[in-house]
Length: 140
Image (cartoon, rainbow, N blue to C red):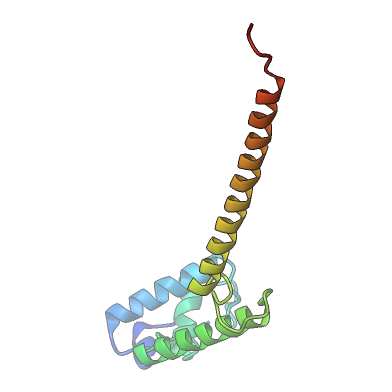
């Protein structure tokens, strides 16, 4: 069984502190059930992580790689959202809000409805007041 040394890992990762962080994160992933990328031969998780680093199968992503990955994920998410749109629109949020013209039309319709209800109520009250006068009997 060959021993893994820090010097073997430092060929792929230049900074000792970054190496420790990388090895710790990968060991935690292995402990949580991630598939090993190399033959671990029943070694401890940290030894397996160091072997993967020495074999150049695990490394930190650069800032450019992280940005590119995030952009790719964002585009993929937008495509999935557009594909599953239920209201027939192509953009997120389109069709959820009403335009000012639609709001004005609804307000005008509500005013017209309220005016017709008021005129119906006043017609009913006029009919009631007219019938009251005819039913009165003169006082002698």
